[in-house]
Image: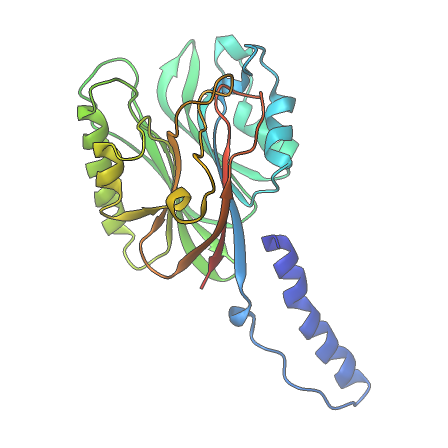
Length: 274
């Protein structure tokens, strides 16, 4: 059940009570809205600026890959806005229009006359939004992490979207994870999702360090290897949905849809908020 259906179902008792009052018939009191279970569907997707496995830029294909999974929140990596290679288009705004969601984009560095970074699509009300740049030890590609506080049917949740260093030496990735840990402390007490391309495999030092503060959704409810890269020849699990290590978020299932809309497959998880 998606969040939108839960909202609708949650409204039914209120309508029933109203009808009963009008007809002077006795009825039991409806439960408060806060008691309604909240189920969220979360996706993380490295969209390679809309370029598919065939190298062709087709944002409609990207949007279709998202819409098929009916997510409530999507973390997007490798997103262009005003960049020459994508004809100066505003990819976050276009994807928002194509999916019916709100978008938030933050620039991590200037590229080909435009901006390049991460984005989030969401159906939930946005209460806070910001982006932090990581301390970089190598030049050229600045990276960052989006942090949002969202209203999930009356419950505040934290959603973060990031894409960290890709090089063989994991020094910078480990530094990035240390900065993520500090952000987690800032949002202590709230349910937290951290999504993105971590460019490292399960069991790596980066993976183990993340597990000190967060739980790997795929390890909890995923079936199989969960390989998300590359879409031409899946060989690596480097895309993750991390959740705070409390009982506030209960993972229900996770899956990797097959699509050629990017060089990555998306990763999708479904969760219940207690």
